[in-house]
Image 1 (cartoon, rainbow, N blue to C red):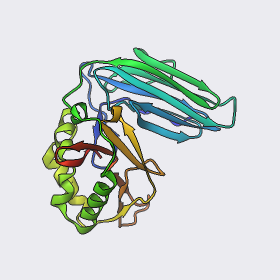
Image 2: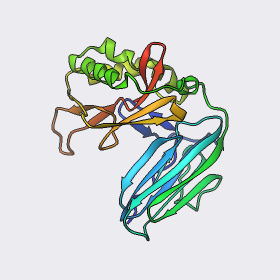
Image 3: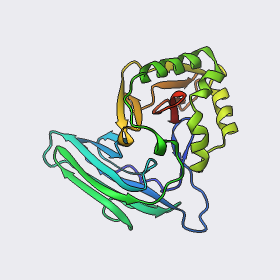
Image 4: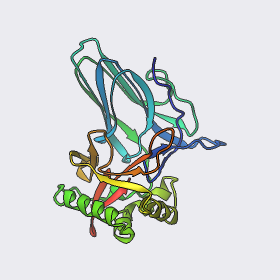
Length: 264
C-alpha cells in the first residue's frame, strides 16, 4: 500500500524541520507543491533548483512543498536508481490552494511540469513561477563551498558549549526569511534555540555529510546519510514513542558576515 498523501498546506519552517501546518482557508492562498510516487524496487530522488525535496527508497506516494523558487524559470528533476527495468518514478509540480487535499501524480489540476521515469535514469523539465518574497537566497552570490565545513564545526561547537549567542548568530538570514514564509518571528526562533541548548538534548554532529550546490550556486544543502542536517539534537528523556531528534544546519548561504543558515 502507498503511504497516505498529506494535505497540501502552506509550508511553515520550524526549528526542527520543514513542517506542514493546516490552517483555515477562506480564500485561495496559492502555493507550489510537488506530488511524487515511487516504486518498491527503486530509490526516487526529486529536486527543484537542485534542492533535494525527497530521496526515498521503496513504494511511496507523497506531496511536499517546493519552498525555494525563483521568479521565472525553475529547474525540476527526478532520478530513479534501480536494477529493475520495470520500476517507475513519477512527479509533478502543481499550484494548489493552501489546505487543498492533493492527488497522486497525473490527477492534480494546475500542473506546471510533470516527469515520468521508467527504469534507471533521470528526467528534467523547467517550470515558471511568479514573484517571490524577498528571501535571502534570491540576492546571494554564486560562490564555492570554501569554509563551509569549518563554519558547520563552529556552529556545532557553539551548541555543544551552550553558547546561545554564537549559535543564534548563524541564523541571521533566517530571522527575516521565516516571517516572509508565514513562519515564526525572530523572538520565537530565539526561544526555540534556548530550549535546544537548555541541556535537555544530547547534541551530535554527523561525520559523514554530503554538500550539494543548490539554487544556481547561491547556496548549499548539507545532509547526512539520513538526509538530515549535520547537527542533531536528541531528546534525553525516554518516552513510550521513542526520543525526538531535531536536525539543523541543512541550508547555508555565504553572506558578508560569513556562512549563515537560511533554513534549518
